[in-house]
Image (tube, rainbow, N blue to C red; front, side, top):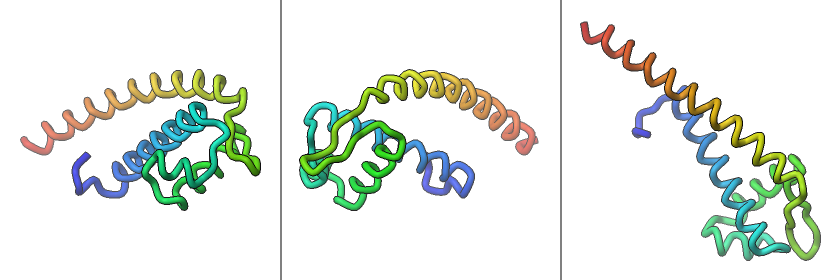
Amino acid sequence: MGNDTGVLAGKVARDLNLLQRHIAMLQVVAEHQPIGIIKLAEIMELPQHKVRYSLRLLEQDGLIRASKIGATTTKKVETFLNDLTQNLAIMGGTVKEVQKATERLRKTIEK
């Protein structure tokens, strides 16, 4: 996405980047569980505050369980992945519709 995306497209890009980080974090947790914040930050090459934020959201959604020895994934991850796959398919169609609408608008303003 370009640098001048504005508020509308910028929010979508930020949200997708955040989702991507959360999915990557779930992957690392699944591979190394139980895993602590410091090790997660090292593996993912992220600051610890970003790891804490993502872990807090993942825990709120019930996707990980935090303990003194580290985070572990829960059985809810499988349901989440199925739902996410369906939502991404729907979003893919929406993205195509937005692309078509953008092209129609471009043609209109170029007249």
